[in-house]
Image: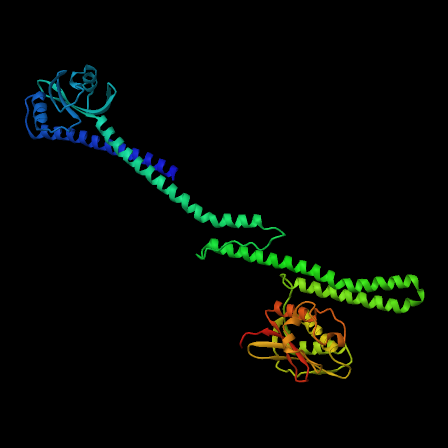
Length: 440
């Protein structure tokens, strides 16, 4: 704004100067033309008579002097000025030394003048019409206008600077808040958030995106922390069992076979536990699922064949022949369904029934596992989906990590779906992965 004000001020000064010069030039040129017209319209016996008649008919401006110079002497003067150029011989010599109409500048006691000299002649004498303009008045007017413009420009610059100061403060306040929030947030405290004004502008959008990023960072940090806590808690028991049997092997070599079987079993359980924990930790990260278009009938056949190998049960495949294609992660869905089937095996005995199937509506796809076991009480259905939660019948039917349903729920959520627990038509529990589907 300051640079713009300087440029405008300089331009204004130049325009005012040009306008003043043009006004004086037009006035001087007009007087020369009027003198020519007067000489052509009337007959004069001498140059002195022509010049006197012209001056008598003229009305000089307040800053103008008109002189009639005949044979080197001023015979008539019109107009007023504190500086009498008709008494300055240097100026008279300059103005009467021309042979044709001439415009020039002259300085006297620090004051600038612009003059025009028009030579005239007759049979009896010769002379000059000299018109002189003082530039002091023009400069004073230009300076006054320029001073007013500078004052207005300075006032406008001050107001714009003041408004800009307050405006920039409001604009950058959210950015400072984001910077402060980022500086205060550390690994020990990820709960801080940037306030959103609610104006819906770009800075609000930036704050929302920043808070969303913090949510993801906090969730990731909590997942890692929970992973470490859960792993430490759940791995303590098998590690204790393994250490005890290793001590037993050292003291009683005859117990080798039985102890080694127990050690292998505990190591396998630890391996599965770590794998399930890693799956849960990765479930909230980008790239957890890699979707592809799958024929659900083919997927159902694959799931049934793989589940049959888990245990000696009466396996039932629910009919599904709609020929529906759906976009999902084949490996993750297979992992989740086999977890559900393994849970069903742990809740049933040899010869009991387990059903695996897929159903579809216009809005949802359901991949389910049902069994003829004791079922899951409604009061426990929400609780057992959490990590390391176990049902009421757990101790009676086997040992698990308590992560199976949590893993299946995480995979369902990664597909924008949900895990539903209900009653099976076989008399036991039915657990389904329900995925959204656009209406055909």
